[in-house]
Image (spheres, rainbow, N blue to C red):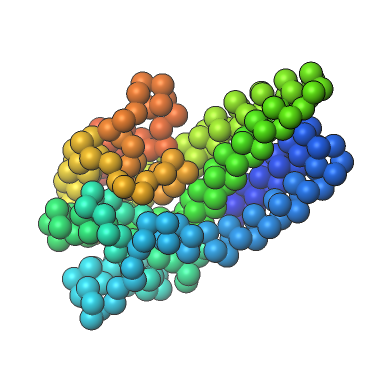
Length: 278
């Protein structure tokens, strides 16, 4: 929770600072109100926004018994409340978890994941997502998605303010803000995601007792991500998925700011856990 509060405070301060640069006292006050509204919305409704963005449909034990039973079994093993379960109508395999707490969590898997993975691989992937729920990563990950979108919007405001501003100093500040804000958003997502992905992989290995299930799934996910791209994927939400949806189109500079560790490093870490468990 403290990381989430810190993220929200940073969002408010950035908004107020740029608002002051572009509009003085009045701009800062407007930015403060906008940031307060954004923080409230991101805490209570960001999960619903992300699920709607990917056209996710909630399923039950009657409509999708195999998927539902896997999640229920993992929730029982982890000592967690049963989350809501969603299927995303997308042929590329992937998955994510969202929500503001374990009691308000949701797990979403693409139809491609269910079609292309074995039941054991699906369980490995969903164990990874349930580990995010147990570690309470889901709120900060979802808030970070809204935060990144807000910063992108703020960068656009700075760009517009720059074009309309005749003051040289403010115009230069606006240009700098328009360039640096998106980079700041990427660094924040990267810092949040890389560490938590390793922890969620480890949690999945111990939750299932079979690290090789997730290892096999990650290898397949890597292969598909290199050749296919999800239809509705956005840079602001890419860090939420178990596999970066943009793996196949990233250059060397982009990989430097990647939101996920390399699949090779993740597989090596899981192999070490597997050896330890033996």
